Image: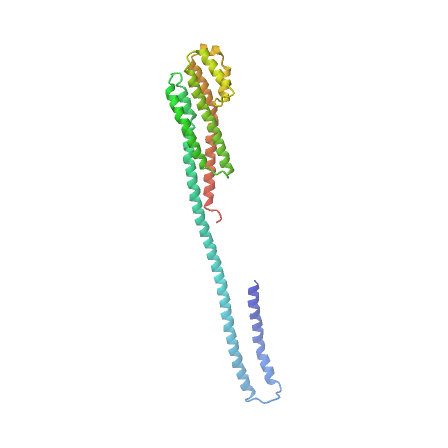
Length: 288
C-alpha cells in the first residue's frame, strides 16, 4: 500500500507542475528585464514551449517506463510467490505419497504378522483336540502341543518387532498380546500335565498326584483355574467316573477361559487395523 501511495503521489505532483509551467513562463516573459536577450518575446515563448514540451514528453516516457518496471516487479514477485507455493505443495504431496507408502507397507506387515499370531492362538483347535481325550488319542494332542508352544513364542517375537513402542496404542496392544499368549501357553502346559497324569492307571494315586501337583508352591506352570478345578473334585468322583471323561472336562474348562480373552484380542487387533487405515488415508492430504 505504501508503495502505491509513493508512486501515485509523485504523479500528482508532476501533473501540478505541468499545469503551472505555462503560467510561470508567461509571468517570467512579461516581467521587466534588467538585461537584453536575443530575439523577441514570441520567439522565446516558442522556444520555451518546445523546450518544456520535450522535457514533459521525456518525463512522461520516464514515468511510463518506471510504472511498467514497477508493475513488472510486482507481477514477477506474484509469479515467484505462486511458483514457490506450487513447489511447496508439490514437495508436500511427494512427501505425503512417500510417507503413505511407508505407513501402508508397515500396516500390511502388521496385518500379515497379526494373522499368523491369530492362527497360532486357536482355542477352537485346542478344544477339538481335547475332545479326543475320551478316545484316548493323546499322542496326537501331545505332538500338537509340543509344536504349538515352540512356534507361538517365535510368532510372538515377530509380532512385537513390528510394533512401535513409542505409540501408546501399539504398546498397549503388545502388552495384551503378551498377556494372552502367556495365558494360552499356560493352558497348553496344563493340558500337557493332565495328559502326563492320565497315564497313571490307579485312580486314587492319580488323584493324589494331581492334587499334590496342583497345590505344590513350586508349581509355576499350572494355572489357578486348573488348580481350582482339580481341588473341587473328590476322590470318589475320580473313582466312579472314567478318567478320560474327567480329564476332558477339566481341559475344556481351561480352554474356555482362554477363548473369551482371545476373542477380545482379535477384536482389538481389528479395531487397531481399522483406525490405522483411516489415519493412513489422511496422510495424502496432510499439509495441503
